[in-house]
Amino acid sequence: MALRMYNTFTKQEEELKLSDTVKIYVCGITAYDYSHIGHARSAVVFDTLRRYLMYLGKRVVYVQNFTDVDDKIIRRAVSEGKTQKEIAERFIEEYLKDMAELNVIPADYHPKVTENIPDIIAAVKKIIEKGYAYEVGDNNKDVYFHVPSFSEYGKLSGMSLEELNKHRIEPDPRKKDVKDFALWKAAKEEDIKAESVFDSPWGKGRPGWHIECSVLATKFLGAPFDIHGGGKDLIFPHHENERAQSYALFDVEPVRYWIHNDFVTINGEKMSKSLGNIIKIRDVIEKYGGEVLRYFLLSAHYRSSLDYSEKAMERASKSYESLKNALENLDMEISALKTFESYSKNCGAEEEKEIREFEIRFREAMDDDLNTPKVLAILHEFSTYINNLVTRCQSIDTLETAFETFKRVCGVLGLFEKYERVPELKEFVDLIREREQARKEKNFRRADEIRDLLKERGIHLIDTPRGTRWKTDRSYRGNG
Image 1 (cartoon, rainbow, N blue to C red):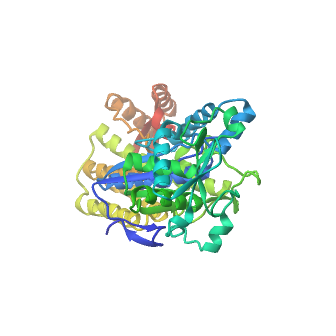
Image 2: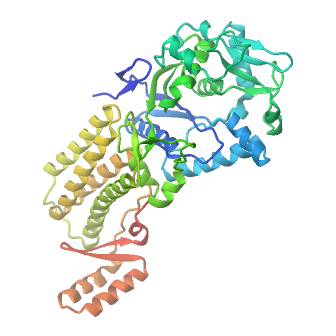
Image 3: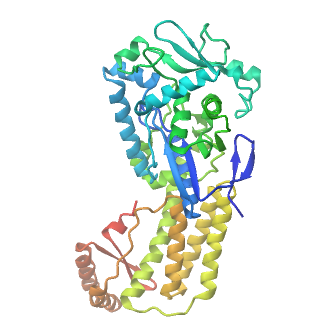
């Protein structure tokens, strides 16, 4: 089975026919405030896709832009008496901190709009020259893309002409058509205050929102490229406009597969500032941890809405802990068997076949339109299997195969990135055995002395029906 995903452009699931190198562009944030869990969902979904493609042996070139010049950034800059650059750089840095906590792999390229103004100006000039755009105004001019010049406009969003006319939000009597949108905006007073003005053939101004992604995606990936991702709120107008611009520039369909994730709702309501229910990424991470939030974001199919609540997060936390405990139990067993040199070959071929079957099922679920809820269900089955396996199997090879498989599959979901193996404790074998003997003889004082002695060295002993096991300080804290 090959990877199949839903293509927004064709309105159907398709097999992704990809070469050895896969080129992906995902729309980044507009850097004017701390990022919320809706941003986190998009980042985690496409990071997981990227990881899976890498798991399949693909080389992935991943680009995510930063919008560092925009009306919202400018308004905040003016209100705080800062420049647009100061505001944008601050929130880009904070976003990257959030992404690190979520184990999101940094993009290969993180281009900013302000660092690519000459390329954007060149693209706007080319679109005008090819008859798709026009200038309006006197000294400092606006440039508009003329939507009727692109006959396929609306195909990505699937909107009718009537719907398209209704959705335009930038009235301007100088437009040739109500649907026309800005490629370049003439400088306004607040732009000048925020130091957000650039020289151009049309006077002083700044780029429109949509043109940046056409330019930055194709600058780093060429046209056409493989996958364009983002939240479904970007389908219209942003991605519809981006497709029109890119087609005007290159005379080819710019993207092979358009993939969009659904929203995060809060207790059944859409997140919005007017409702006061925006949940910042960092606030959730502070309470639950980055990997628990990541687990939660993958617990629903990416094309389904995901409702955030404290109850949902508590469930995610417990589910995450059960997977982590299985990994640690398996690792502790391997460490103990190596330390005491008590391993044998009382299991093997049948168990390794069963372990392989879990990975096969994982791939089938991922190939099925990135079905991460099904993958998580398979991982919980696998964790139950592991917890049983450690009670009956003393084959190091088999247990290591189970560990490596479980860790590898979890790694595709971005889980347990910071996990550190439980060490062998051969230098403490005599002490551990002395403690076990003391417990048998009900000499609990001596047993506690040995336990406390090892605890001072960062080793936490755990008594199990199979004998003494342990964690070190770092693994004891939970490994991320």
